[in-house]
Length: 206
Image (cartoon, rainbow, N blue to C red; front, side, top):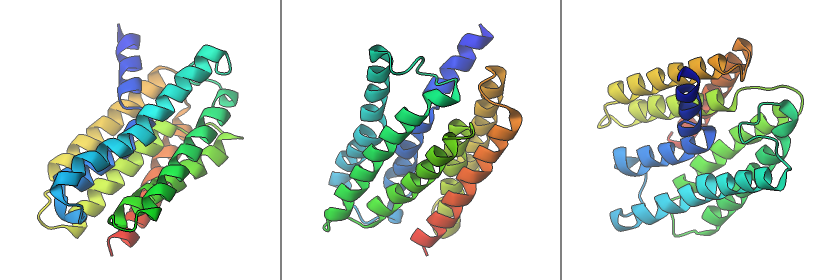
């Protein structure tokens, strides 16, 4: 039962979910963080979710069904290179699309560009070391909450921060319980994701 719970947590709070959570914060929780008109926010959010979560997930399932990927959990280091690289391509294409739409707030492509930078770093590391993608994503989420709370006084970041920290602890615990990572791989992933996104988000919202 514990293993089933741990696997559910790993799937629900997988790294591909984090960009959607960040954009949910930017578009709906802290609306002053962007200049996107209210009627268009839902469309923008679903565009981001489609290109950064749904399509990459369908690709991963496709790789599994074709036999290219042994398991969607990517327990072995060699299983991560292709899915991570393909995900990077999807993210870069989305960043380029948002960049080309000059009528949209530049915040949109800048935020995803930063996330893509973190994923690129994670992917490069993946070729020789199994840094935790889950914890990299959680570190980025914590950074987003911290920066938004510091830049926008109307956003009370205390409870979102507490929730983010609790979820991060939960994710780290289940990843270790599943023997998906060594402790150092989770710690480094968390610090890497936090530092890259903390510095980047501070530059975006100067």
